[in-house]
Length: 72
Image (cartoon, rainbow, N blue to C red; front, side, top):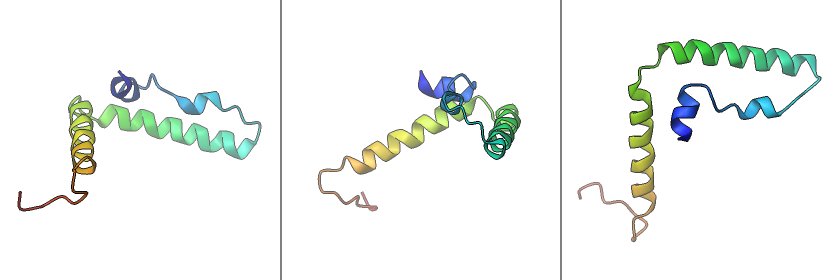
């Protein structure tokens, strides 16, 4: 599942880009360090919360009228 892969750091699209630019390599290392720090602070509920948010967006954008009635 992609959300679990993202959460556990097993989905790394940035690793498919190989740049020889030293500045780019520094930025990528900083991103990697920050991702590790964030991963250690996120609770396991992250996946469920992310999924709930995504499902909410799907519901909002799939309304037949194109407008969501906040009083509904």
